[in-house]
Amino acid sequence: MSERAAVDMFFDPTCPWAWITSRWLLEVEQVRPVDVRFRVMSLSVLNEGRDMPEQYREGLKKAWGPVRICIAVEQEHGSAVVRDLYTALGTRIHLGKEERGQELYRAALADVGLDPALAEIADSTEYDEALRASHNAGMKPVGQDVGTPVIHAPGPVPGETVAFFGPVITPAPKGEAAGRLWDGVLLVAGTPGFYELKRSRTEAPSFE
Image (tube, rainbow, N blue to C red; front, side):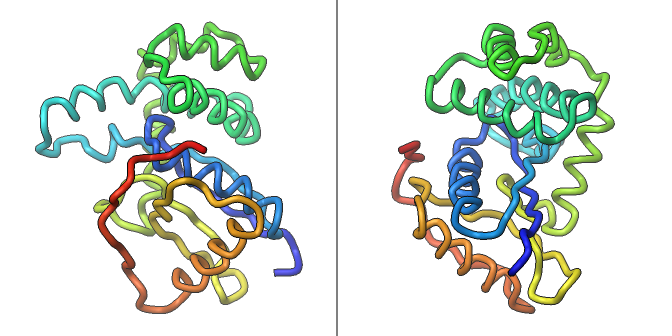
């Protein structure tokens, strides 16, 4: 790719694996002609009506807040601000291990120069229609049996987009190693008829 290519990553701020993938993509931007836009999906929306353990169900109740705030910020301030807010939220949630709630949301909003009062949207359904639309746009090309991260990237045919779940990695590769992984991911994702490459995870998320 001689020109810089637009890549969308659909994230839920609460997912540690998506957070690691997002940090990898920021590395990719430095070594490949790629510009990443972070867009919102929701694990709470994805898992509505599904049978799951009570502990996970309770976690999904708390997951509504961050995505509602992110989609509201996208609607009102644009995707570039969402990128910064995701970094602020992820730094506090995954690195700082802060409890999700109004205090965290207000602090993250302040970190990126936004009105901390926007944290109140966490408990509002005002932007839920936009949230579901963004979620559906991310998930439609990959189906409903995956989670986050979902990436939409240029395909091998000009004007074509390929979409896929993953990669699930830990820790995030840096420098040229990040670029090589990107090259490989695009290669397999752009292969007609390719659906899955997977192995059991043996390590917990590492945020190095």
